[in-house]
Image 1 (tube, one colour):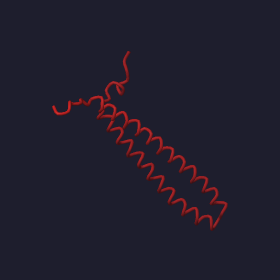
Image 2: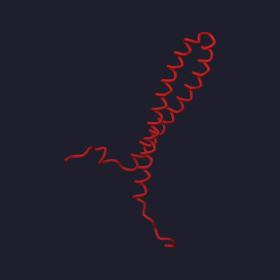
Image 3: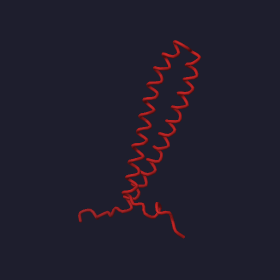
Image 4: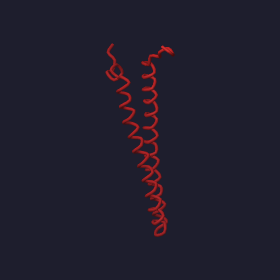
Length: 102
């Protein structure tokens, strides 16, 4: 019964590349989340002074957007942790300990 090539052909180097890429993606999501929060708070403050009803609707929309980006960031960070652990386990499995002093 043939297995998927992804499961058969993966090496620790491939996993470290994937972990690094996903780590960068998670960092971009966290950066985007911070930028959205910073910009939306000042914009919502200005909008509230002019039209409190519209500010409430905009707050709910911004809140949903921030929740989605935060969820994506945490999802990517979880995969980064899993892949980093897999790389570390693969590297430790290939590590050959030498006796001390020899």
